[in-house]
Amino acid sequence: MAKLKSVYYCQECGTQFPKWQGQCNACKAWNAIVEEVVEAGSAKSHGGSGSLTTRSEPKTLDKIELNAEHRLVTPDDEINRVLGGGIVAGGVVLLGGEPGIGKSTLLLQLALQLSPLRVLYVSGEESEQQIKMRASRIPFSNPNLYIASETQIEQILAFQKDLSPHLIIIDSIQTIYSDTFESAPGSVTQVRESTAKIIRIAKDKHIPVFLIGHITKEGTIAGPKVLEHIVDTVLTFEGDRHNSYRVVRTNKNRFGSTMEIGIYEMRSNGLREVKNPSEIFLTSGNEAFSGVAITATMEGMRPLLIEVQALVTPFIYGNPQRSATGFDLRRLNMLLAVMEKRCGFKLGQKDVFINLAGGLKVEDPALDLALVCAIVSSMHDIIIPQSTVFAAEVGLSGEIRPITRIEPRIAEAEKLGFQEIFVATTQLSDLSKKFDKIQIKGVGRLQDVFPLVFQG
Ligand code: TYD
Ligand code: MG
Image (tube, rainbow, N blue to C red; front, side, top):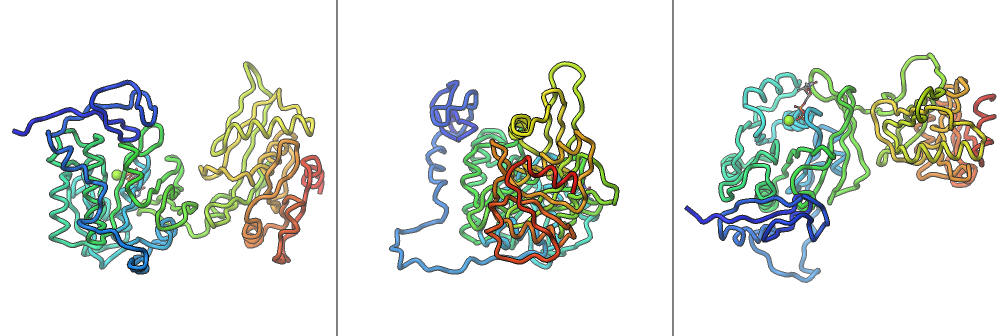
């Protein structure tokens, strides 16, 4: 038997150490170093995992041929969008997400939709029967979809050779292991080395690969951080488990923008693409409530109208509570302080709860003005007209600040039938387009907004 030796890896950054220590020298993470047993000598043989092609030589720039990236445009527009226009030949995509959110469903559905292309779907998590049952709920079929319940990387590479598929899906990378290494599946060595092998095949044979990755409690993809560096694209699948909407977000993309999102609805027969996202984030129905304001945010290149809900109540005991779902709590506290100082609202005596409809998380500062108006609306129990939209940032001195890409936001609000939109006065001069159906109201200070919204 080969001689075994122990090496120590930092689970955060993948740095290797000869012996255990409490803190990683490279990334300063505590308690991240774990022991792994490898075969003596193998550490050297896989040292070259960084080189992705079999052999290469340095070339001068003018010798390098520019061949247009070959992309496979799938029938799923949301996937195309988050990948920057389709699946790139030889591109390796890591899809992370919480358990049960729908990662396996998303990729199985994609495999079925790609018919008649040959797809190899390797699952280390579910049996063939389970996958068949899942596939039977999805209303697409692909006679050239091959399912393999397998976890050994050498075996998977052999399947690739036999089938030469157009796409490989691996569910999940944490279950895959190689015989060369002694450590358990899911460990730093196994995950990293299996991924490196997969990437080499993808690049050599120009086969796109999707890897499903588990997520830790902290929300990062489990396994070494290096995994995220060596793949081409990192997508995360997120959403509230109690809500049927799911969002695919691009966190890293060597072949396109990282600002894009794709939106799906989980149905009993798989995931449905949501073509007009604004509609789902607005509460349907004609009844108006106080504490609700609508904002026009941007998700990637797409404008999205969403509803901001606020509840302000007198606090009863202890400290007043501030809670925000889908919005940064620190930013909420800042806005409350601005309202108190600049407009004289007595918010110190109130509990304030904020929720964004549809389980979405938004970081766009354009949400500020809608949030402030929703709070005032709830506090004084006055309804904001349902035809009103807000799109502006609020500064520390209560000034209304301009935001990016105002025109597509106004256009989206107009398209959905809103009649007025509040923006920063300073932004009005940026507008080159004419909007006839929606009234654009410029405001300069927070104090000026309330009379217009609540009495007009
Ligand atoms: P799954 O893809 O197994 O999640 P993951 O791979 O991220 O762990 O999907 C999990 C949930 O999706 C599961 O609770 C059942 C539900 N589901 C549907 O609602 N409709 C469907 O058509 C399918 C296949 C699953
Ligand atoms: Mg799964």
